[in-house]
Length: 363
Image (cartoon, rainbow, N blue to C red; front, side):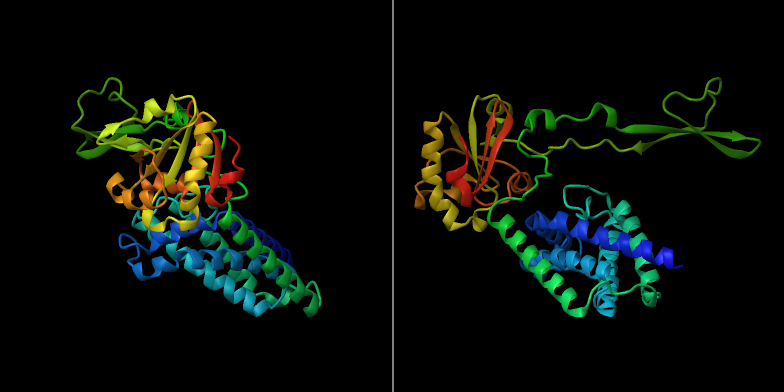
């Protein structure tokens, strides 16, 4: 039993630290996932949507700290009860999203390891079992350090986590696991994987000696048995979505996606929602646009808002570039900042910048 407890302790601790650090790399992305859970279409907790970002930061840092506390055996009762409450919360979310098919990716490991809800639920059930083993065997795992030393370790780890969170919010994620990372050919990423197409199964129904018999094939009826009663088609394997989907550049109902991706050098100014645009970033846009145009870039804007909606804000900040309509989710996925900039050359992403770093973006 002691060996099992030790294994569970290390497995749970390391997994919590890993999961927390992955999300700490991109807390804004995790907040988008919480916002999705809190929406009217899922849990109908819309009053919590405004708290999604602070909740995301707290949860990911707490996840890392709990993992460290478990590994060093610090504050055992607090740690194990906190682990139980957290895994209970996550298990409920993943079961709800899986059973009701509400959220396609739980966000457990951010964009680094996408999991479908049932995979996430299975993971959480395994973790729940392991944490219960630890709960009922607290006497079998010991504290690694003196209380003072453990307290210092936790304090330092917490400070480092807050520093990381501040840095990635004021700039961009340290590691980019998203579909729009630098080096991505957008046109290629928009294509379906030929090896992951939708696969159908055909159920052929027969009556044999008064009993129903079903034979499944991938196409034609079973050889030599054309006398079936009926046939039903079902999806055996869903087609995998392209890495980049729902991305389109439109204006006045006309699609300009291919035309713009074919251009030699383009700098996109991204504003996914004008109500969330930072004044500090908007005030920097005119200077960046001038610098990009001098470097030979065609500068265009992408937003989920219409030009009419954007016009007053753009005029206020002396921004005079054409804006095209693009899906808001795609924009906020591409760069975690509003406004932000993304440069492409012949459709290949060559650079991205948070508004804090416009002047440092190489053109």
